[in-house]
Image 1 (cartoon, one colour):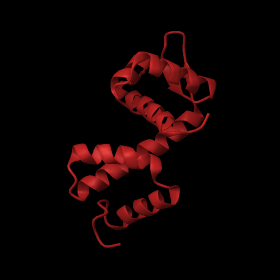
Image 2 (cartoon, one colour; image 1 turned 90 degrees about the horizontal axis):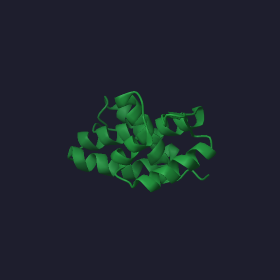
Image 3 (cartoon, one colour; image 1 turned 90 degrees about the vertical axis):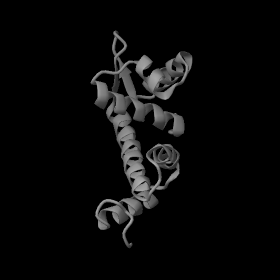
Image 4 (cartoon, helix red, strand yellow; image 1 turned 45 degrees about the vertical axis):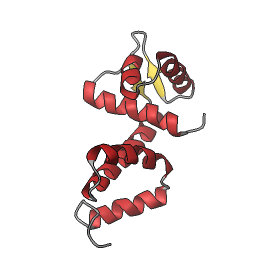
Length: 129
């Protein structure tokens, strides 16, 4: 399975929901991402088949180590980019939307440099490089 934007979104959603609710089912992912039940059902099957999630007999989802690694990486990008854009003056709603787009496309090198810049400038990234 190719790790594309939708796979990253599903895994990130499961991680976020797990942090918020403690337990996650497919219907929670449907509501969170505002996708159709059949789309999420197909995606969850593919994620299980490829070893990114497990689902118990009651339908509770768990990230595997491989799934968690991807989800945490994307979620870190999302949080940091959202905070950075907000610190730059972007409204929170636009910052979240833009961060969601950026988190999938920014290279590991560029993200590492953005993170380092933010850390050097006291967490906002709006100081001097």
